[in-house]
Image 1 (cartoon, helix red, strand yellow):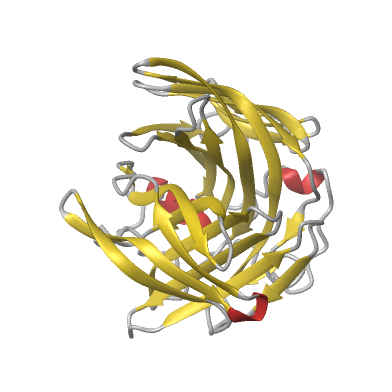
Image 2 (cartoon, one colour):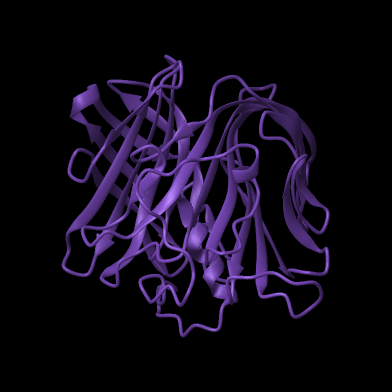
Length: 343
């Protein structure tokens, strides 16, 4: 799921205090995801300008030579003022990039904004390349992941060790009881190696990464205020994606996908996943849950998910929390947690 829809901050919408107003609004002439999608690759790795919202979203759990854990994020968001493209500054496609590095003691963040049609940002499907300024992600199967900020930089090589995974029902991911949905697939099987450049110098790292690809035009219902999203990478080779969408009536809408070590997905509809906050942290002026109990009884999952750094706040145009986590309980491992709507 992820904070992908945050790119709507680029649109002339009147945002609520949480920054999510408009996500449940009219699709305004844009295409709407329909059940039984038929993905076509490599074309669907590229942009879908007839949909309002889209993202290419990579998170990575990394380890340095001394065993220190690190987290890495690289995201390119596309948002459209109209369902079309054209050359020059009048192009209605808008782009935003987020990059971050998380250590146990620090969280470094950078943001880039761009207008479509002038070459500053974009995505090509063949050969695959996603970029904004000098930030680059250029390989679905294998390639480079690169970004720079005021206090950090990274240059990684990613190699997929498993297949692409359709989220939801064959890639149709339902987000609410009233039927809002997106097209959604992932590559959760990357191996990663490269260099983080931090204020104290370069660090050679290795680890795993997860790509999420999603596009939609109306991703939330009008009674939903934010989400808590988990990508969990278990030590036995299985993976799990799960999210809960918080509603104004105090209820939650949930979804999960169990991913076997060979990449076979098993989707779970609303109610199968339970995510319960266990501990909260003061993050600036806000209180954010940073330790969770996550349960998927159908797969014997009952785990505690804890932030590596509770202060992993993305102080960007629309702020949110995102950072690496550890997993303990019926299974162990590492993963990523994203939480929106806590501003």
